[in-house]
Length: 162
Image (tube, rainbow, N blue to C red; front, side, top):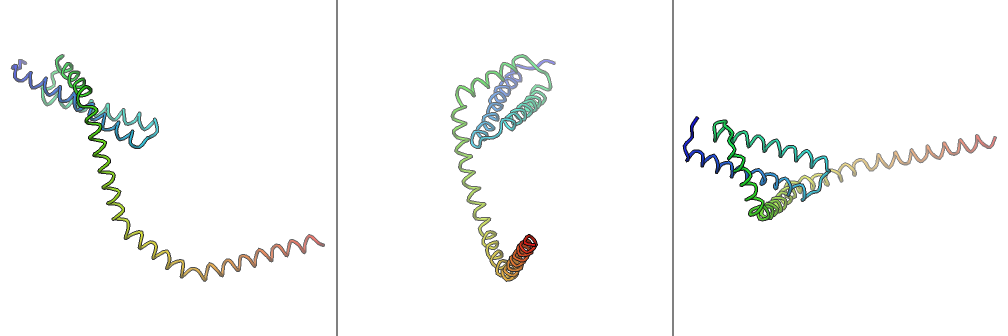
């Protein structure tokens, strides 16, 4: 199958963009794992997921852009994209993504605080009502329990004396 120069240039540019997108995905996962340190096993699983997603992206790019034909310049384009991203965009992207996750975390903390405040208020009222209703029963059970303990101790004392 013969491709025109324009189609091959589009394939090369899409390989460069894919080469930029894959380390960007890895940096997003890296920022998330550095934000909240996780177990080394979880990091390995996330790395494996990143590799699997990268393979799926590469497979899709190869099928959709170059109709399933793998060429050497596609790998060169991937390499160029990865190097360009690491040299030019990596630090900037990590800083921006870190700020975005800070903003999202703050938003969700506020959202859940607003969402859970009525539930917490209802829980406190319900807890006070239940404690108020159960207090006489609990007081009676404590008194019965203490009386039972005293009678058992008295029984053991009188039994040991004889």
